[in-house]
Amino acid sequence: MIISRAQIDSVANLQSNIYLLKAYSPDLVRKSYPGQFVNIKVTDGYFPLLRRPFSICDVEGDYVYFMFNIHGQGTKFLSTKAKGEPIDLLGPLGHGFEVDGNYDNAIIMGGGLGAAPFPFLTKHLSNKNIITLIGGRNKNDVITYGMKNVHTCTDDGSLGLKGNVLDLLKSIFPDVTGKSRIFACGPTPMLKALQSFVKETNIECQMATECAMACGFGICQGCPIESSHDHETYKLVCKDGPVFNAEDIIL
Ligand SMILES: Cc1cc2nc3c(=O)[nH]c(=O)nc-3n(C[C@H](O)[C@H](O)[C@H](O)COP(=O)(O)OP(=O)(O)OC[C@H]3O[C@@H](n4cnc5c(N)ncnc54)[C@H](O)[C@@H]3O)c2cc1C
Ligand code: FES
Image (tube, rainbow, N blue to C red; front, top):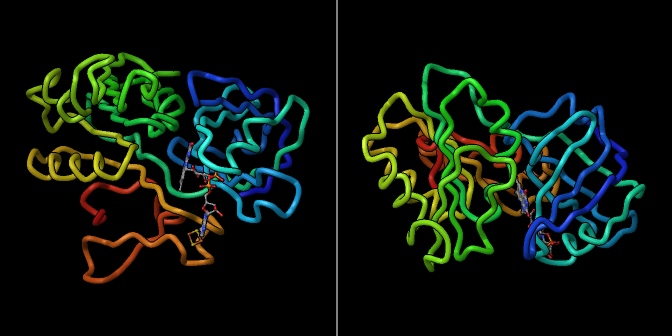
């Protein structure tokens, strides 16, 4: 883990409320792995005091990318950054996706901003048969940037299948088998539904979770998630996750 005084290269508006921040940070790039995150100090002042966590969206050369939407004050500040401005990045943090293993099909499933870690993940899965399933409430919510072999769905039917990503999986891959591994990131109801599905079908599944964080590296104990193995024990999302095996956590 390092604190990198990185330099903004650009903040581009990808679509509707979604932005892509590109920063020069060779030291962070060298240490990063898909599914890990960075705790960003969004201004040089005291407000907002807490850093904000963002998935490492991609790396390219000496540059790291983050994808975000304007949610509150912190992300609003981020969206106004200009080329050449410094930015303080703490990371890489957490435990990312495990891509090695004996499986053929890498099924990437995401909803909304859950798509953020997938461009980097896609690069690390280049020796697998990738199937990417992306959903959103409507077509403006569907993010496919940096992904391969993408199928889409929306709640309102404005793009792709009308339904959720699990409906999409069942429709295009009805005989999904043990030679597959699912990599998921998205809203908790989506992850919960997926957890039940993989339990029934016995498919390996790793999921990136989210919660409010203060320190981001295991000191404040403010990001617990219940373990499914030992009764009433907790893991920390920032340190033990944010990526967990689906069977290891209770959502
Ligand atoms: C591992 C991880 C990865 C993420 N990746 C992405 C991503 O790639 N893209 C993306 O858009 N979003 C991502 N998020 C969500 C992102 O961190 C939030 O959207 C962001 O923090 C919103 O900040 P804000 O200031 O704009 O919004 P606000 O809603 O204004 O900020 C959050 C509010 O909660 C408060 N708060 C934050 N943390 C705490 C805390 N620990 N305890 C008490 N109060 C707190 C803040 O002070 C603030 O008031 C990720 C979250 C996690 C945990
Ligand atoms: S955010 Fe502090 S322990 Fe996880």
